[in-house]
Amino acid sequence: MKTAYFDNASTTPVDKRVVDKMQSCLSADGTFGNPASTTHSFGWMASEEVEWARETVADCIGAGPGEIVWTSGATESDNLAIRGSVQAMRVSTGRTKIITMESEHKAVIDTCSHLDDVNVVILKPKPSGLVCMDALAKVLDKDTLLVSIMLVNNETGVVQPIQTIARLAHDVGAFVHSDLAQAVGKLQWTVDQLGIDLGSLSAHKVHGPKGIGALYVRRGRCQVAEQQHGGKHERGMRSGTLPAHQIVGMAEAYRLSKKEVYPEIQRLDRIRDQIEETLEDLGGIQINGKRGVPHILNFTVDGVDGERLMAAMPRIAVSTGSACNAATVEPSHVLQAMGLSRQQGLSSIRVSTGRMTTEDDVTMLLDSLRHAISQLRRSA
Ligand SMILES: *Cc1c(COP(=O)(O)O)cnc(C)c1O
Image (cartoon, rainbow, N blue to C red; front, side):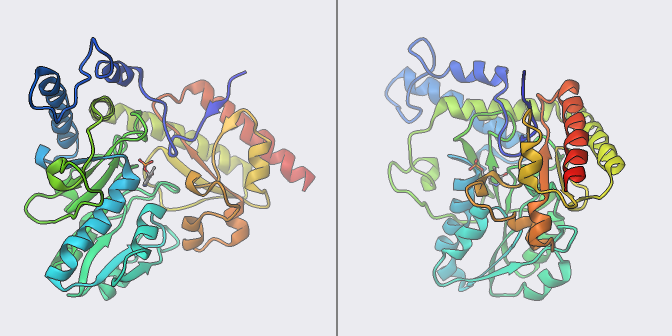
């Protein structure tokens, strides 16, 4: 019997159309060359594929192709954006403050806390998960170099008002970085609408391959110092031979998710409504965070341990929070930042849907939730 996959916020299966595109850039009968080889057609052809991908990804986020830097994923993009911009601009601007939030991905929080000679301010979200604008306005000043706040939270789906955040930050001359890993294909936005200077992207959250991502760097505004030395690829910001197969895979995944964004949002919204109705019928369940993207739903089941709930639903793949924290038994730092107690955090589950989620999967999930929760409550 099959297992229904509801952990698309941790990763997604690669779309078959993306696999086909990737396969065309691997073997001897395909475009396998090194995109940096300038002395023969193998290199020129690979370079053409990479530049097609650059334009495609740029177009999906409303950027120019010269504003995309390929990386290994959103983790590296977060590191490059934060460390790179601080290294390039701390001395020249004389600014020493970075503002971020407790609910950010560890790739942002831990990167910030490993910086030398920087004053890191970490804001607590409101119980809704949203940034507190008054608190942000209070700490923003002429000493602020960078504000790093994600658009879509990976654990709760909460969408931050980045446009307003960026306006406030720019008013004091600070730069704005946003982790956009969960925002592609589930929300309509462009980098200009958001007003950001730096943005982290990942392919594998939108049915592309793992191990490839990009950093958006607004042209003419923001400087980013390279974090690994080598052949000075990507305009000196990120050295390393470009993996053409990964890059075209990311571009095809982004192209498809943009093309199909409207029906996808509607379909996933309906599924979310169905799940929420079932949770309401069961009672004693709180949804965590203000309603945001359609594909992520996080909830606390009163008096039921999350690990036990998952064990009682062996055919359902969900998670108790961020997979990156899976090695520890600590409750999600995001939920705790929103004011949930340790016990509430440990009683929380994240359900995340995606392109491959079927009606049958949803039926399995709802039946399993009803069955497992009432069973665990009876035995409590
Ligand atoms: C998945 C994720 C990351 C990490 O991305 P990788 O491409 O796996 O490095 C970072 N931030 C958010 C919000 C994510 O969802």
